[in-house]
Image (cartoon, rainbow, N blue to C red; front, top):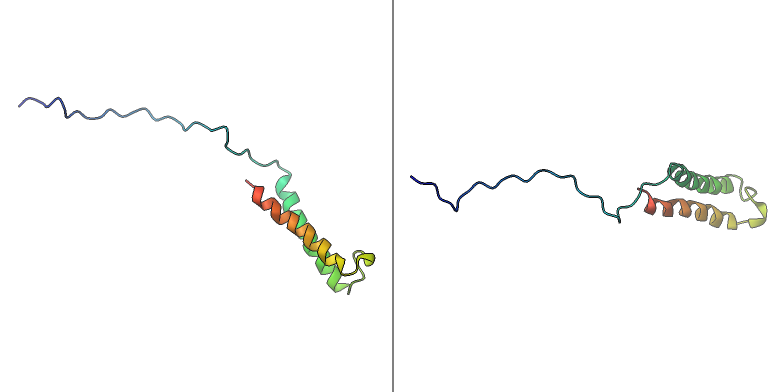
Length: 85
């Protein structure tokens, strides 16, 4: 029986690596992760010291503003997580 010309096996295309696009984000520098976690820890420690010292430390002149400073430092660390790759 003659073979049909319309039924041919498709030839496999050679595998190629996907091309990197120009919009692909670059990895973060080595210092990024330690700074990010460091800011979160410093903010937490700042607030803990404020509560343990009953408002005397870390900066007595700020009073209750020490809580805002502690949260501010920690929030900067948390905002850095949005850029972490």
